[in-house]
Length: 466
Image 1 (cartoon, one colour):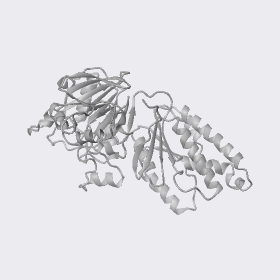
Image 2 (tube, rainbow, N blue to C red; image 1 turned 120 degrees about the vertical axis):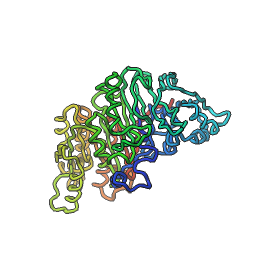
Image 3 (cartoon, one colour; image 1 turned 90 degrees about the vertical axis):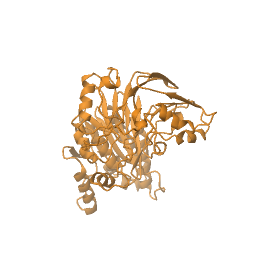
């Protein structure tokens, strides 16, 4: 099961566009922005679809393969029925099955033409259903959420939680929006789940009186799920539906990490089926100042043990470069281990399972490789082919080390092939080699993300059409 977090924020996102509180200001300054919560399972099952979901710059591949839409409830951040009309305009061929509570389904009906390939299915707590797809049959269970808060909001009162199992048996529990609940109260089966997405809207604001969770109630709910056998040591638990009532992301990540909970990020991919040495290797690409390093650090910060590998080399006579290095060092957590080296092969060979290695960046590593073979002066002697062959051998050696590395890897590299053709032979050689390195790595890592203007854009793997 491959779960893409299309959104990890609450109804107003985080930061709230109208708010300048400390939490919103910190997130905004760091370039972080969360859209309302939504999750895409294997490209064929979508859970919740708010007004921004189909257009998320950090979202996944197009929704052209979507076959089932699950709606937890009818609040507008979870259901934007106009998406059914926009889908209809492109003459889709697969039937779209829409599942949800009665009032949410009613909100959808006027957006669908009589001949549209859409079928509605009303769910109540306790219902189970099979979801046939082109990938096999998924299984759905509808559970009672605790979203109502006594104000007569009918849409909240009929809110649901979902468990979704893929054809191989991997299970997701999608538990947002909801207040405190127990296994018995919502009718949960006790079979373990592989992934839990759990509401954590209100942070340290514990007197909100709403059908949501906070930093005081999440540990209680999680303890109950663990005691009931639903959450095990192998379950990935991620907090979602996050709002500015929480402390800024770095502090929130630290506090939830003590509970074994990750902080969900927009565009994050959780893959339960991945196995082997490369299943947690992530390549981050982008141009200058696109947010590559910051995004890579956000991903790595979910881990308990991080080694940061800086490949910048020594530039003692360059004040501007020294200032860049200082800013990078200051924003990294103090408990990270920093190694300044271009010998990535040795670092990767020594990395231990269960740790995370962040390499920033491979463009500087390649520069050091070319420096090491005296490429710049040799080019003047017409040795282009020899230099390229030597560099490509070093590239292949590095990729082999990546494949064999047992640690989680976050690799940062520049995308330099989208601009003008370099005017010099050395510039063209560097561009070609870096493009070859990025392409070769992309074939062997689990995830590739392209950063554009500070926004992460997951790069889908190539696949044959249905």
